[in-house]
Image 1 (cartoon, rainbow, N blue to C red):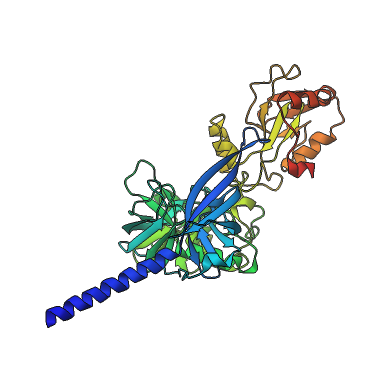
Image 2 (cartoon, one colour):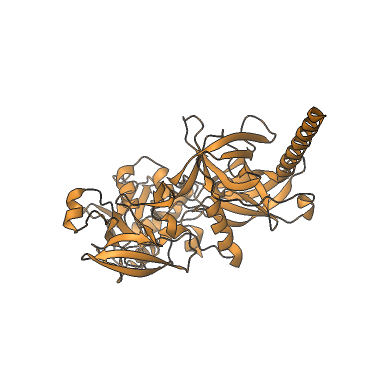
Length: 479
């Protein structure tokens, strides 16, 4: 009799487990995307690309997935587990910063019989997870099991920005992107990337960033994750600690830059020691303890707040402790000289007598190896009050008026006829406003490119026609 009861209980457990898994699978979605991919080396052109990804139906009638699954999308369809019909979907909200997106499907039939997945908490190391999705190697739903290997800050490949990430050892492959990682039936992360040529090292966008994104979108406006606009330096070296008068009980990061448009400009100073954020002590290596014995980059406790909130910072100034409130108002795009990776828009450009000009973006840097070291160095620099953006001579379309200049490419420009400019728009305006016979472009080393204005204007249409270019400038400048 006891054996019968045991077997009966085991049967009931297996049935309940199987039923739970089946309910979960009903909420998993395959995403078909056709994207328009800009060509940053020829910014007037683009190509089409088809790809697939994964997603999960969550509360509110949304599909949660990665931003990179739907980036630059021109047309999208979604297909539920166990069904063959595809439904047209549209992007409702996207965070390219955190590689997250929410999709909407208008047809109510798509959601019939589905129990939306809910969210859990940030998983612990060694916690068991199940990753669902539609990776390469087949067309049906895949489920892989693994554990959480570590939780720490990591660079997100999609945006190039750094946020908390969950490393897992579950097999993750192309096509898994956007799929949910579940623990105890709840979403604890969204699959985003893998390390190539590694064995089972995959990364999830953690659930706390997902919740931040969804909370951010409740007013139908995406504000993003804030940047303090501070340059900081580790204080691990004994000499620098003695120089700033730090004893064995003090730790933090040295502030070596306060960006001119930061909300902390005029409040913090170069030479201040940032010792605490949101009540959490900052170590000399720039980390904070976010769980017992677990450390990550101190900005983690800034990322937990929404734009418009304030976060308390503690500093040492001339060895005197102080507290300041930092208003979260700007993203990293407001702070850095080179904008983060662009999506869902065509690149800006204009052509003047065959000379092609464009703002410097990370898309442009990664699109070529030409001048990569110099341009990458610019990408790490902060904006100044008189400089928000770098402009480059992208290339020179060969013609009889540009002989000798065809070797110029990816060349940063600092002045137009002896005048500096703040950004690409002002550069364009200065080029258009030149009344002198010649336009003199110059870099910070004094290297010059000289354009005969009258000759360039006369040859413009001929050059555009020769290279089969419909418009001499991007749509944002035409408007």
